[in-house]
Image (cartoon, rainbow, N blue to C red; front, side):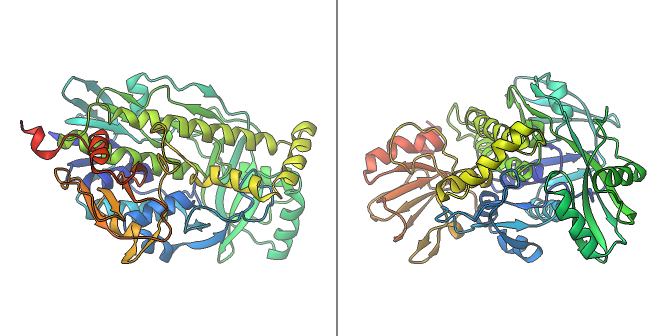
Length: 479
């Protein structure tokens, strides 16, 4: 029997598969498409996702294929200076097209031993107390201890589970594609600058060799957004929006997306879980979708591994939903707000002008930016030190940096006192005695996802908190 079947081979599914493999969990990824998509839905990684890649030793690979851009203008496209004093060592956006991210995460998961089957569609599942049975389109049947649906906004897993997906349907749709434009770069820039004074769902971004990434408002909302627009439809909407189709020809691919906003009622039903777009969809404003899914996987992976490996405390897997559901709800709210600010109606435009003024204040700009880049998230671990529940940035130690110690995906006790011990949990928690001028705490216990689970200096207090996240002492489980 397989430990975990992951349905969906996008960034969320591959990140989850890799996290599970760090803990020797047997993983099978089932991807419906026979070949990786060429469609570039996401254009980059925000700070928290960049940190995640560094925590797992992947960042150099991403930096080699991406470009760093300064923060600013990500909230509803409102121009604003980059905020100061952001709590991250990566205060930039890493521009990298989604197919590159897909490739890097797929290679990472494969290198760790995940099995990946492409061209494999799930059509049925049966849940049992001890396993999940999966039926494939070719009649094959598989059995796993757990199954995770990472199969997108039209998730088959979510539908088969019968989990409600409440929210708002799309009211507006945008066409997207890559194509060659024969108009001069100066003409394209001039027209785009003028049109975007009022229509922010229009743009033409140069790629290479006369090819552009083009966006234009659709004439309406399609009945089935899985059906790509025709090239003629794209050209018609360019003319309707900008007065010209810029001599567009030779499309590489075409797609469409809406502004629907929905969230799964539950992220877990027994041995089946949902992550990424299968759990939540929202407009792409602020570029949060891929990032949110990767961060779901980062939260879930170690918890599910702990359950399978037998050391997880009783409620650990349930904290995936209790922690990540509110985070996604907040993203849905901020994208709703951004879409309103992008409306051409007089009321939203008046609010947009006011927001433009407010965002010149660094405190406002920082608050909104931290929402987009996900560095302000604090899980509710109860009252205590201000660090509790927050992720710790990549602080400098005397012997290197913090994130370099987290590549294995284990918990970590960073001990500045030298007087503490994790004996009995050393198979799950690393103990590092080192000091940092950037850490105003005697010691911190970090979960594998980098969030602070305990702050203090007392050994007994530490022993009281270790079981909360890392289960019983190793010897106690066999008794």
